[in-house]
Every structure is written in C-alpha cells, then in structure tokens.
Length: 215
Image (cartoon, rainbow, N blue to C red; front, side, top):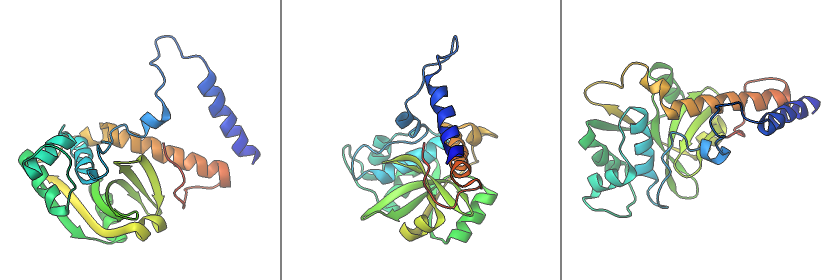
C-alpha cells in the first residue's frame, strides 16, 4: 500500500507542477483515451468507427461518414454487419478478411504482423471494437465507444464472439515504421506502460493478468 501511495503521490505532484517553458498544454485524460481512436458518432455506428480506426493506423484518413456512404450509398446513421464493413473499405484499396478465430491463433497473428484488427464482441448487444495489440494475458483495445482500454484474456474471451476482420491493403502495407508512429499505436504503448505500472504498484509484480487499467 505504501508503495502504491508513493506512486500516486509522485503522479499527483507531476500533474501539479508548472509546465516547462515552451511546453504544450496538458491534454485531458479522457482525450488521451481517444488519441488515434475514432469515436462512434451514433449508438449503431461502431463497425464503421472501428474500421476507420484501423484504416487510420494503416495511413488512410477515412472517416465514419465516408465509410457509411461507401457501404450504403446514403448519408446518415447506419449499423454495420461484417459484409457492410467489407463493402465500406473496398473503395480505398482495402480488403476485409472475416474469419472465426481463437485466442491462440490471434496471438500468433499479432506476433507476426502487429497490425490492429476489428473484432466482434458481445456487450449485451453485438459491438465492433479494435484489438490494437495482444499479449498472452491481455487484449489492448481501441474501442469506438470507450477509447483505449485493456481487457484481461478471460474477460475478452468471455465477450468475444470469435469473429475478427483483418483489414489489409491490397497493394502494399503502410510505409515502413508508419504503424509504430501512428497515434493509435503510440496510445497503445502508453496504455501498456500504465497497465504495468499499476500492477507493480498494487502487487509488486508484473505483468498484469486482469484488465483494470485504461488511459
């Protein structure tokens, strides 16, 4: 407990300290959660927002409204199915590969490619989210409704339907190093660091096995 108090006290003092000359203004924590993450515009548009988040990480600036228009031929609110997302991304030279997967298969994918994917989860209703990174014990999400957050493996597997969409550029991947420098993956890096810091403060060990931390 004393160790946790020490960490929190240090963090509090850091926030209270005056900014250095020329430093950029502090960004609110809730805004940090959505750095690189497209927030869904309506209760129904999580699929299009999730796809927009992945495309942004791959170097394509395509917003939710553009994807809805590409999928439906109309403007306005729309929900998305797996096939809708495939139609939505096609005009930008992206192909959607929907598959039924397992945790172990998805982990092997991330070990090889490290590219975010769209996943369908059940949160009381079908909901598309983005898995931005995966470790043996945790899934790092870029969620259209809640921003960057982490779920334990148990929590993710409990809610995941097994459906995942791999959105791949048909011609070639993003420029070398672009993905790692993207706002999304930088936010995920901060989330990982915060996650591990909280675990060490609370238990004295790491890494975390339960998904508690978020930006």
